[in-house]
Image (cartoon, rainbow, N blue to C red; front, side, top):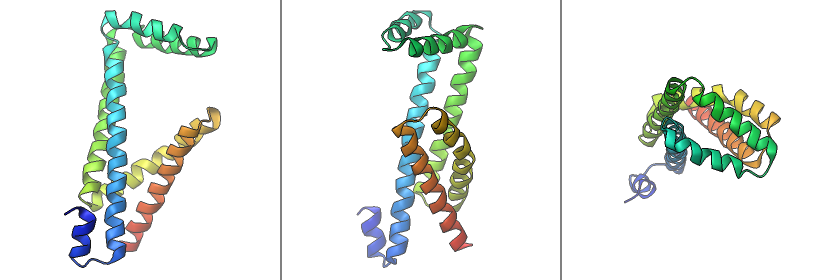
Length: 164
């Protein structure tokens, strides 16, 4: 029996069933973000290996606009400029960030109140940065992520306030 059917079979009100399904949806969203963060951190870490850099250079050269090529080349140069230390630190930060998403996702999956608080606070603290990024470099993906995160924060704080 899945969580929705199990909750209905236990005689829980429809609102409780919806809350459980909503929290699990947010949990899956956080886990998906963790996977993306881990992939990015792994890609950055791969730059430590000198044989990977020419491959990245060829990808940069294939970018359609010169401005994109210049920006990507600048980022790559900045990453590898001081040896592997910067790459290791940036990659470590990405893995720590992914770990936070996993912690949130697992806690929300099991409907833990601490996870709701952690997710609501952490997500709301990042909203100004997401808004700034959307303002300066607009894209539909950034707008959707911002909208999803605003909805998550509102939903979690409303639920936490209601149960307080």
